Length: 281
Image (cartoon, rainbow, N blue to C red; front, top):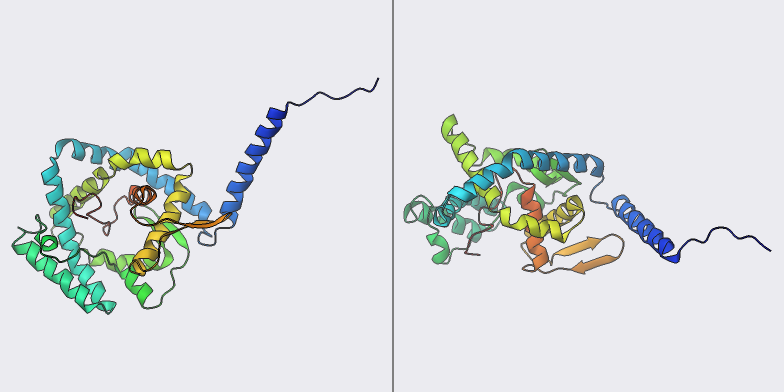
């Protein structure tokens, strides 16, 4: 009689093959991502930012969310958004979009006066749209390449081009430029709390929508930056480095997850969009 070895259940073989495929697929996606040559460092910094958020930023946002009525929160968001229109308009001018730049400055003038220091967004009601520009986008219009993806401590995801532009964006920020230290710190603290509170309701969706939070945030950050640089003239594209690309238009549930992913790790970004949760799109 011929002896045979122990029989391995077919279900176990299938399970091993599935696990191997998942592991190899994950490794392949890391090795073949041309946008992220600094991935090991970036993942470590991403984890650091998340820990800072868990220990410090998120609790502040939760307190702010619990004690601040919604009308007050809308006014706070409008106030900080109005301050940003000056720099946004300047960048539109530098990019040759004179009409948009004048519109941004008119927004600031209207909202700062008739809108009670920007607490009311009457400019949008008057037909002056809100724009979102920074010096990183200006450099892109001037032909500067974006460079590799990088995660900065506290400031979160950037490209190398946006990292180079960050000091000027910070210097031009009307909150961080306040000379009075106590006022500057108070305004900065309120803005951080406001931005973080706006993301509390999106975290569960983000957790359920992805296994790898870092890769998800990275890919969508790059997509959104490219979308902004082109002023929306190209569709958002999700790069799957193993299976090609599939188009994901703005306004889908996936885009909502993307905005949550990016915002979640923008801990103290002075250029973060203030209208992320505003009732007026």
